[in-house]
Amino acid sequence: MTDFATARTHMIDGQLRPNEVNDERVLDAIRSVPREHFVPKAKRAVAYVDEDLDLGGGRFLMEPMIFAKLIVAADIRAGDLILDIGCASGYSSAVLAHLGDAVVALEEETELAGLAEKKLAELEVMNAAVVTGTLTAGVAKQGPYDVIFIEGAVEQVPLALIRQLKDGGRLVCVHREYGPVARGHLITMEDGVAAPQDLFDANVPVLPGFTKEQGFVF
Image 1 (cartoon, rainbow, N blue to C red):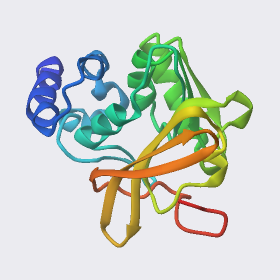
Image 2 (image 1 turned 180 degrees about the vertical axis):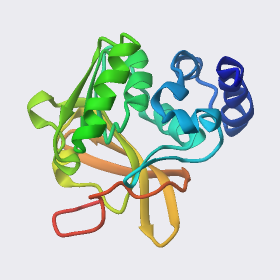
Image 3 (image 1 turned 120 degrees about the vertical axis):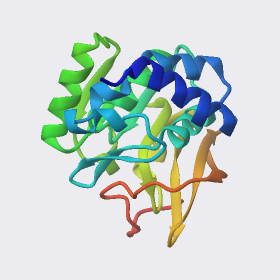
């Protein structure tokens, strides 16, 4: 039987710390959430491997190192309102809920949204609410947000999401512009101006719906 607590510790010490994820608040949040709880039973034994974990239907849990580095880049503060786009089974929302004040967990696949709601309730995550809707549209009525976290790669970021950032807000994602090349990406909103910045090399699948099309800007 897999010792998941030990596997979680090994993930932190073997995958995250060596890749400059040393923010103790972030590490504590990741340590507090059982990743295996959010994957199918058949895949729980590999819940902590250093790769994306396929959930089926083009959805996945992001590789732990990239996931953690994006959280660090988002600079989440205790009072922050967070929009988690593409929450899938709810793992990312559970981690983010440990760091901010409240999480709006957006998922467009009805079955996954129901699963996320169930999994979060089982762990008594009370400050994350699952919303079903189109990922690229965000959830404007609950915003604006201090942090928007996109759970996957995007070819470009929809303007509709950038407009849901507060002044001083941060959006993080993996930006894939050409072919297989992708990078961790931060957009900061300052005085109504969105400033994009590439941060580190990353390689995760493109989130469904986030391919290039008219109306995308970054």
